[in-house]
Length: 231
Length: 409
Image (tube, rainbow over all chains, first blue to last red):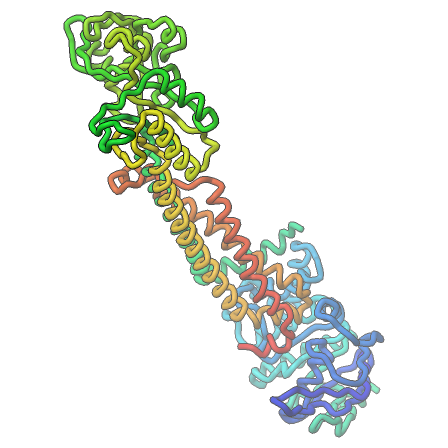
């Protein structure tokens, strides 16, 4: 599903360059539940952004669903994101003036689905995350856990191949963290590839594979106990 | 192109960010309102000018004579210059290119009687077509014609005030009046934009006047209109040339300012047209200044809007919005706000002009108003400005990497 070879990425800082990713090789198969761990500055967010086509890498090859990602313009990237990827952010990133239902339906709008249909589909997904009753509430009327569940519904609504979650539980307490992780597990059980970035050991433990980054390099890549059971 | 979902998005964005939308709309509405008011008032001032100088045909020249003030060619000063019919023929022939129409004028003052009403009026002998020179318009009967002149008929065309004074509300047309002891038939009644004094004239054929009151071919003075194709400068040159020709013809010194007098409207026209020109420039500068202020206003707001929405736009991009759809979203919102508020400003401006228009006459503002084309032009300019103002920030927003947009707070 995701194949990364010798990936490099650096950011210009004044005259100097900050070399963030120093040659990452990573292969994630369809249906995997992977977490990327690392302290801040290890390059894990950068990796997710590149995988999510939100940022462009400097060197190396990146294949998404078998397709080489090269010379992406914004239009193509937008299309691919809409088609293959679903995003979950630490800060939820819901549009504040849209209701939960409208937020969930937005990716379908960019997919070109008719309004009535997309609202129906969006409602189904809200039901899936247990927020059907909250469909017509604005984000600021929801709790953190509820917001993240809306965001998850929004990430899933286009039936993406890969769900990318950037610290999805970073802003949540432990109870809501568990409910969000349960949701992600359910998603993975349905066969979707889930790619989580976290610095919380407990969260990573609930995934099936942990990749640890340090200073732009992978230092370990191993299956968790859950992962081993499956294998 | 028409995408109902896109419009729904835009209306939602406008509606949910009401304060922002109202503020940006207000800028535009206010700019258009000021533009309309200024243009309207400017037009009102122009109308006043036009009205003030509307008395006579704008291309008229009057030629009069007096006593010489300088001896010349052995002739003493103090000699009275008298125009004759051959002067008329001379001018008509010599300046046939420059003169559009020329009429001799023979003026006397006479007592005019109808039934038992009587009053003193100026009787002016003229040539058919003279009514054009005075901008007079016949509202009953006709003006003098060539047969009247040829046959020296005792016919009169009287001013509106004469009819009012002597006929007390009755129609004068076809009636006979006594002018200085002779019976004339009234063949027409005229009005004159020059006002009451110009409507106290009585016109008759100049030939009739010459025969009855002098048995000679004396002509008091000439009224003419110059060829409207002449520029104002050419018309002034023509006036001077004519003066010189008449001075030569009557043996008058070229330095003599009194014997031959030319009253050339072109000179006044030049001042008026300079003033109108200045006024126009002023109006255009003010109008466009206001428009530019509006454009700058909407541009600023659009830059701010894009900045404020950077994160939202980043989210939209992460969810699959193409750059084109981001640009369209921002720009259509900008255009919609500009168009609607521009229209509101316009309605308000026109409404204020309509409501206060008549009360402004004492401030020399007559019929203030703006032409539809000006207003439509201004609105289109503003909408275009809205497009441009929206386009640049929108394009930047569309180009910004979603990751950077998402990081923004």
